[in-house]
Image (cartoon, rainbow, N blue to C red; front, side, top):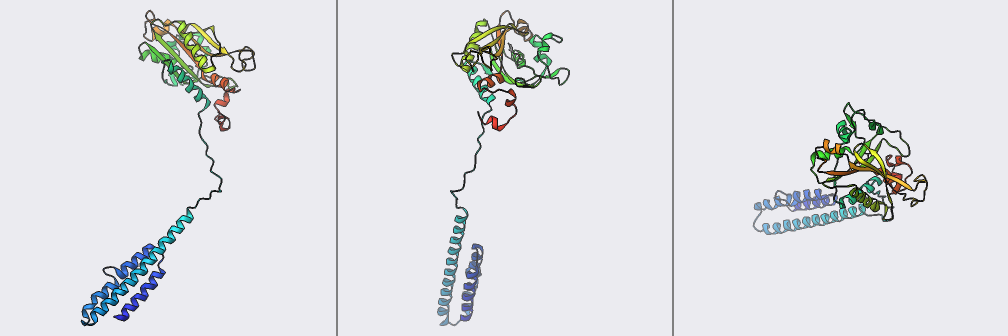
Amino acid sequence: MKEQLEAIKIAASKAVDAANSEKEIEELRVKYLGKKGELTALLKQMGGLSPEERPKMGQLVNEAKQTVEKLICEKSEELKAKATELKLKAETIDITMPAKKKTVGKLHPLNTVLDDMIDIFQSMGFDVLDGPEVETDHYNFECLNVPADHPARDMQDTFYLGENLILRTQTSAAQVRTMETRKPPIRIICPGRVFRADEVDATHSPVFHQIEGLVVDKGITMCDLKGVLEQFAHEIYGPDTKVKFRPSFFPFTEPSVEVDVTCSECGGKGCRVCKGSGWIEILGAGMVHPNVLKMCGIDPEVYSGFAFGIGLDRLTTTRYKISDIRLLFENDKRFLGQF
Ligand code: DAH
């Protein structure tokens, strides 16, 4: 039995030496020290020994057990230390390496200006609505007092998707949808994309943006329209900006005006941006035509209203001194990154 014990000790020591992982160490622990392990088996065999030999042998087996246990523990600690060292090495940070470049997204200039406009109108109590880009003839023209064959249709070159289906040429279509679904008092703006079959050049694009405004209530007059638009122009362009109302024509308003502001580039002296006039046109507006109110189910004898349509692209190009409207739609990051 003594020899057996020695043999086990030598074998265990070799095996522990050769072990290379926590898993192998655990297997050795079971093999030698477990319930069915080799040393435990020896202890069980002691029943066959004489009473004098038994305590001696018992002591030897226990000593062997402690030796093997110690070997296993030491090896296990060693392996753990090695693993930690490897992990630390793998995770070291080279602080001399150049940092990764982070590109941060920015708002498109059109969105920045739109957000400002929304803030201004919301502070005056306007709701912000959305309208469909694919519209029917009914909402885009008919109910805005532009029947089929009316010459005013020539003012806007239309993309047709079907006989009655078009891409909206103006956000004014939202006026009709609003009046059909809301009762006065109405105070809304509707920003969005509009589409016209225009030739593309530095000031024209087949897709551009408008913000429609509509106010309907009892006793609304041209003074309210002037007040709101002047306030808007002062907030967007600064308090010294002058605002000019020129008589104009739109089929859905009577009277109609076009609104100019003093050129923000030259302050009104005349320059390349305002083509020497000192003024820049920013919107069309007017008092809602009684026919339009009627077609939308609102009694023009009781209610009156004003409406306006602001060109967002023009406002953006003048604010940022952008010389070509096409830049707004090309999504060139080198251009957009400047704002
Ligand atoms: N829809 C017009 C256009 O696209 C702009 C406009 C003018 C809108 C007068 C209005 C308005 O609401 O009252 O040219």
